[in-house]
Image (cartoon, rainbow, N blue to C red):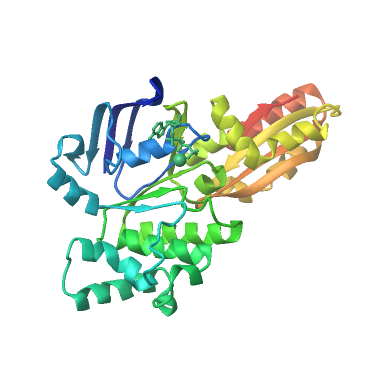
Length: 337
Ligand SMILES: Nc1ncnc2c1ncn2[C@@H]1O[C@H](COP(=O)(O)OP(=O)(O)OP(=O)(O)O)[C@@H](O)[C@H]1O
Ligand SMILES: [Mg+2]
């Protein structure tokens, strides 16, 4: 659905050049939820704005659904933009229009169908996002989560192939964030829509994305399936973002590592292994005892995973055998002490 080849973008501010993107290349297959994460100023918004050419690259190619959009005429570009819906952090609703009128706006702009057909489409969309009862309210009468539902309905009005979300949940509380992410995930499945979302929160990526690119200083520093990038981050930019979620910093601060007298390992496992009694089995089979210093058992989208920091007491050769035994059960073992 998307192919980016070597995108470069530099802004000139007061005669000084500010590089925003430095050679970004990536592919997103149709139907995927693709996440882009990075710190403030990393280049995320610049990148997502290129996907509907709100921003033009200095060089490089942008191919959407087989079409090189960098070479399109203005008229052709307008047609292309109808295929791309966009959801914004601050909703960008028109305050003087009702919910239904906001959702109808993109249909009016391209004069799509009769008024009755437009209204039928609006009702269908409001049903989809769970706002049917609010169709005649004004934005000021809605909560943040409801406003974002209007934003999503509006983005879907022209039946786009691609949905872009720029920090769509950053202005929302955690519970509302979850409900909006659930809605986006539903839409992705139901409508088989490709979704690109940018965020600075690893928690958003963990819940909804299939693959993720980490951008830092205008470059992709890491890219891959969420489970791989999240559980085994290679770059320091990624490690620090993951640490916020996995509480790795807390383990450092707790002093538990320094006061450990045994071997300390971080065990990481995904899928069915999450339901196996691996700690008990290992202790039992190799004659070891253990204590748990820290642990997370959760899900990455639909994939269960666990990450446990365990202190083991026992003989050296037994520990070595246990390590091999765990590896044989697809548990990744990192020796921390
Ligand atoms: N229109 C512009 N004019 C000048 N500089 C810009 C413009 N847009 C972005 N930049 C600069 O390009 C860099 C990347 O900005 P961008 O908005 O893409 O970052 P971001 O990752 O979205 O950050 P945030 O998380 O804060 O939204 C920054 O250094 C920014 O100052
Ligand atoms: Mg931004």
